[in-house]
Length: 92
Image (cartoon, rainbow, N blue to C red):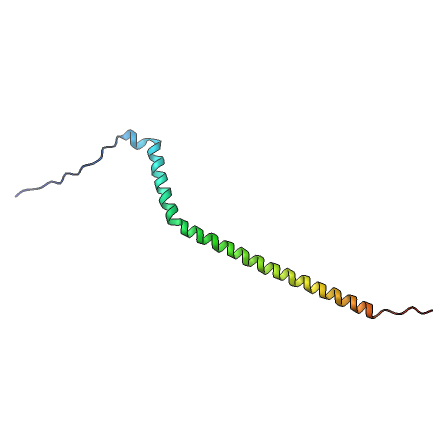
């Protein structure tokens, strides 16, 4: 009976290279880059939703303000016409 052993080649990295700031910086950059690719779609959709909600809110607020303003103008015109029609002529 023969036993075969598989030999795996491993890259020997010294402990100095593993502890270097460049190595950690590279690992952080790779992780950050992967996460930005994964989450960029989600963030862009969230930003679009927020912008559209703000636009809808502004639209409704401006409509309500314009309706109040129109109502005030109509009341002022009615008041002016009612006041001008009830003028008492001067008597001598």
